[in-house]
Length: 137
Image 1 (cartoon, rainbow, N blue to C red):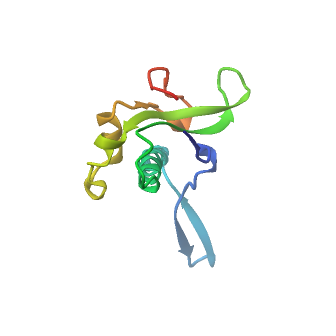
Image 2 (cartoon, rainbow, N blue to C red):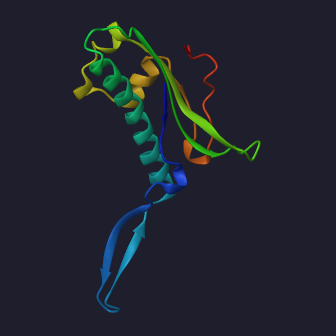
């Protein structure tokens, strides 16, 4: 399964809006690059876990035993300059083990690591994860 999320450059970079009384205008307060990196990565990890959950939950008959998932974006590949899918997370999960998780109490990144996921070290810089070891259907 492949899930495409918006590219990092389309991710909101405004932290807050501030009213400036002297000039009677509203100015945006930008997020720091570190905060943008942290938020984008967090969203990426949450989308991966949520996607696995939704597929297993929707399959009431239990026919789907394993899901191989890639989460990434369509962007210009830094090495080729071509528009391509860049995977930032690659993970495979088995129904029996995944459905035992308490989704209300987990940390998405820790769960992905527990599942042996391939995770990009810097998705904001469009560094793709090496998903060659992730089982694909």
